[in-house]
Image (cartoon, rainbow, N blue to C red; front, side, top):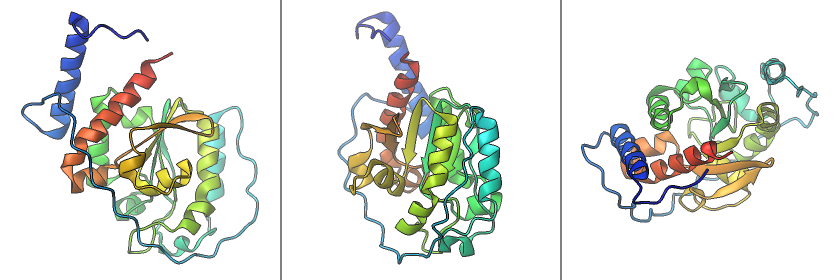
Length: 249
């Protein structure tokens, strides 16, 4: 997609519209064009003890039809006990959205609200995600939402490396079934695992990588933005990168 000169009227109108969307999302009354100051490195999660998991191979569920593939996967994971987190859940939190989505969003792990609803990105964080998507012209029904682990972790809230490894075939199946144009990683644990880089999210976000041959971008998750609203400016910059990628043939 050809870029317009910065002094072109159409470019100025487009930039103003983007700024207004950002203002509505953050609740600000005015927006300037300055970049945020560099963020401090995110705190590393507390290491968790390994949990037992089975090594039984997963049955093949991917077909040419993503709807069929995802329904087969949903049935496959219904009683999953591949890791010790199964004892902590009320129910499996399976993916939600469009099986033919252009954007696949992956969060770290379900929390209490997700565990209760059986769906990812719920509660206040889910409401903020809806606003974030709306700011770039998307809705929850347009994307596919999932998490790196499908079971709520222990009360500490940190998903273990063993649980991520046990659940990773399920995530791989979702990506292969949907074949999204872009994968968006919302969280430090999922970014570190899929990008194979043990760096804080502050260093991983905003940079394009590839996961399963899909363009992949990491950004701040909604709960981090609720805890630290100053991060919203960086998240908005990431969302604009995502929007631009979707507009490129």
